[in-house]
Amino acid sequence: MVNEAYVQLTAEGHLETRQGSGTRIAAHATARTEPPHAESSDPEPPASHVDLRPGTPDVNGFPAAAWLRSLHHVLTDPAWTPPVFPPPAGAPRLRQTVAAYLRRARGIPVDSDDVVITCGTSHGMAAVARALTATATAPGVAVEDPGWFRFRQVAAAAGVRIEPVTVDANGIDVEAVRRADVAAVICAPAHQFPTGALLSPERRRTLLTWAARASTTIVEDDYDAEFRYDGRPVGALAGLSRDHVVYLGSVSKTLHPGIRLGWLAPPPALRGVLLAAVEAAGAGPSILDQLAFAHFVETGAYDRHLRRARKTYRLRRDALVAALQKHSVTGRLGAAQGIAAGLHLTLALPSKSDEHAVVARLADLGVTAIPLSRYTMRPQPPALVLGYGRLATSRAEWVATRIAKAL
Ligand SMILES: Cc1ncc(COP(=O)(O)O)c(C=O)c1O
Picture 1 (cartoon, rainbow, N blue to C red):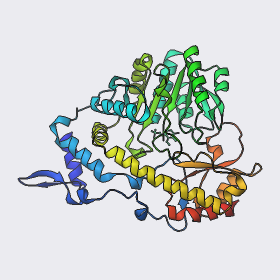
Picture 2 (tube, protein in one colour):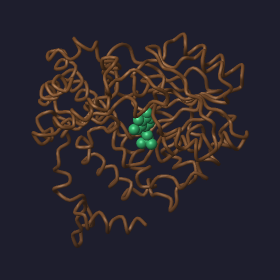
Picture 3 (cartoon, rainbow, N blue to C red):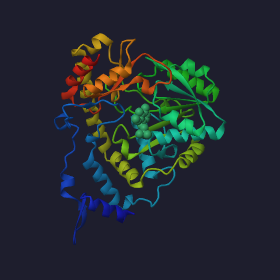
Picture 4 (spheres, rainbow, N blue to C red):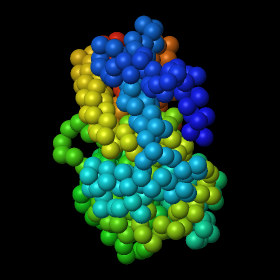
């Protein structure tokens, strides 16, 4: 397998083979300098179009040279020799690295045995749905409304009953969760998707008390916690309770959604059933990517990348918020919401406006935006969700003038 990987990397020009001196990273590959994240090298979108769909980071900022160094390292250093097939819970070295990262960056007291490597949050969610149905018939799960649709999709396939719960400025309505007859709740406490609300400390406490008393499970989707720009860092809910929170994380926002690499940290009592569910939900991620990511984190490359990306995204957020203000968009509509973290914001529209008409008008003007209703289960006041992760700061004004015009 390693040989094949060599052949492939050589064929792609990443490695070069010289007789007598072995294999090395190709000169052009090592010479590639890192930051396409710097604004100056931002890919300028065609003048006529800007894509503000949320959910996707700037994959042009992928730290290709550092990633390649990590991949090269795991392929050549005997101490890193990958097993032929990844163990079901993931490569032990990566589980160890992720556990250390979660302790350090997210305040979750876990060790490697507590971590299961997945193909991303979606894989983790599918496993959670399976695990719930393994223990009850059509168990109920409270989901945020609005919220990301992935859990609803995997829940439907697994036979889980979904209970939509309202979200406000303090996050999910915890009283409504308590009233619902559910075995679990799934939420994004650090940066609710798509409203951007931060779950208040009081609601965090109430939610944890509910889970402890009712023996229910909280599934924490910590999808973009690495990108927080304002206020104090927000720890994970899983840092407050190891007994009732299933923690889900991935590299989809921080590195590249196409890598399909993530992790879950279940409470000790759910470890067995969740590991079985992860296996049943399909094969895990590539062992080469698992080890490359372990090396990438251990050598500090991940932290360096996150620092650079955080700075870039913050500048993009600032540029978009300022431009919306300057062109009187937020003056008319009220402040943009959910801007303290992440890669997107929401913009409430006048109460009688037709979201789809605004989105269609924006498309005519060259801006792709997503209506809030894409993420809602019940009718809600109209709003737009605007992703700025890929928005060059130099295009923010252009976008704001288009939005002002569309309104
Ligand atoms: C709310 C939310 N959670 C998690 C994810 C990441 O999912 P995955 O790791 O499966 O790519 C996304 C990606 O769009 C998301 O929007």
